[in-house]
Image (cartoon, rainbow, N blue to C red; front, side, top):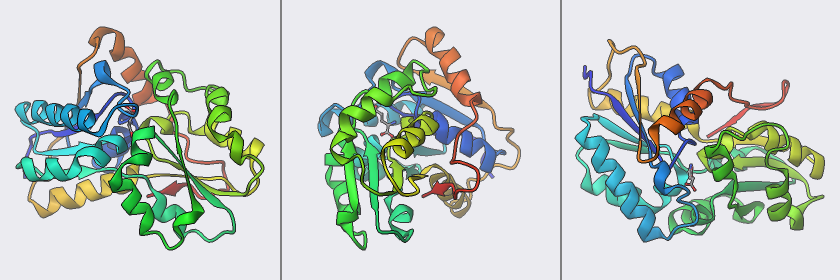
Length: 271
Ligand code: DGL
């Protein structure tokens, strides 16, 4: 038994979507969420910059006494997970784009993997894609712009239409079996993204993300290391490199917004 909190890190607010799943699946843990909002988005930065920022954030959470660290940021995982696991003494669990379950679902169509520009380029993600049974089924779309809107709490219907049109125009009309939300920020406007896909693509356009699989992995890792807490109550502390007063209402809004997992009757995808 270990009553210390779990540290959850993202470049900004996207990781709040994973925190919500953690609160549901591991309600007896307490959490410190740290968003590096002052330096977001990470997705347009170089690998070295992302590694350095993530490493500083990890040190900060360790100084706050966390017993385990969750990288709730696909971009940070791609650039830094190997280094962090070597450097830190606490277990590190990390999210990555859920292309595995998406590619396991049968279908003749493509799997669209939406993520930050950095994630789609970095070697770790490329190696993951190469391990898929048919890597060419996956179309990687590195997008800039969604993260900034989510940081402002803009996630409603139609909120991403212009950005999606800009990046996905070459593919419209194709059959989309799956849409992987390969950036935790993209989970908040999931309904807007699905609606846009269904308007412009054929096929089921099933949504997948890696949040719940990552939280289940966190549970296994805590159990294996004797770190589970059975006395916590899902207490959450919000910490940020940005303007805390301005960001706290957005954090609360996102913590309370119901997460969309797919139209009724479809299979909600998870990694
Ligand atoms: N939420 C992060 C991810 O999952 C990255 C957002 C950013 O570009 O900072 O990739």
